[in-house]
Amino acid sequence: MTPEQLVDIVESLSVLTDLPRTGWVMRGVSGPESVAAHSFGVGLTAMMIVDALREKGGSVDGEKVLRMALLHDAAEAKTGDIPMPSKTAALRQALGEHELSVVREMLSSEQAEIWRESEEGESLEARIVKAADKLQMMIQVSVYESQGRGKLSEFHENPANQRSQGLAFVEACHRIVRQRAGWAPFVGEGTSETR
Image (tube, rainbow, N blue to C red):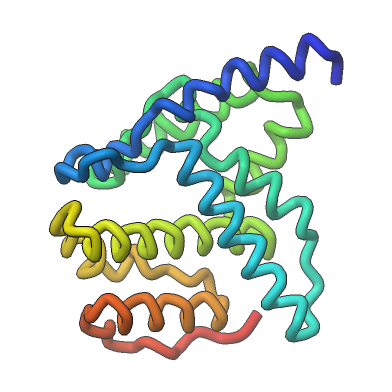
């Protein structure tokens, strides 16, 4: 990595600090978190998931998890934050190809590979980041609702937003969020394996 590359990458990603999360904007949340704030939240959540898994004897590459968490929305610096409900299967496919191209232009080859692995979601580290992404979002839904900043029931009524990636610890966290927020539990909660 050269000094020029570092400056280029940080400049390219700096737009994420001012890019509000579109899902919140669409639902009228005032002063919503930015994509960069969300990435920080995902990193923090992922770090704690790693700690919890290690406490149970698990072996996890924590540095890789944090790198994935920091970069998981990097492509949005160029594509913007396109909300899930807008993504058809065809759009998801085309967007995935475009995002990979954007990431390869914007990041170092090592960083682009970390991003790609995170997107594929097959390694334990990538699954942790995907789980942290949903868990952080659901905690944020709870926070916004408790602050009276929006009625966001469609988030907590959608089982896809509670994906734990097969991690029992994350599933337990989702249950706590749901209980504290007063949301109904999902049928089948408590069925994930510990991995």
